[in-house]
Amino acid sequence: MPHIDLKFYPRGLSEEATQKLVDDLSAVLINHLGTTDKAISVMLTEVQPDAWKSDVYDPVIKPALEQMAKKPGYNL
Image (cartoon, helix red, strand yellow):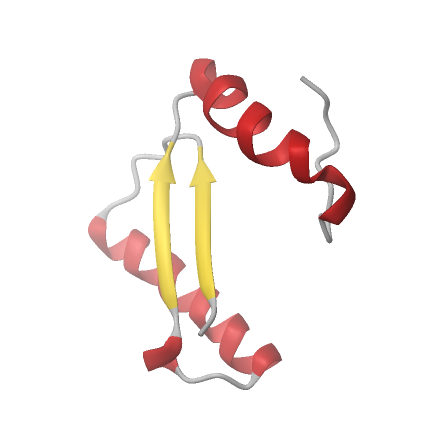
């Protein structure tokens, strides 16, 4: 039951582009984890740049840095 919780700066993606992103992310999980499409859930959250530190970096990224498979190349 993979779940992706993707937070990113607003990109103005169309509904079609958003669906393509979700389809591509799902394909990676299916390919690498051998899961099925029905088992995957994806949450997309747009975060304004001025709220990234307070909404994402401080509560989510910073406390989990040691456990991250890929760490960000920036510090806030």
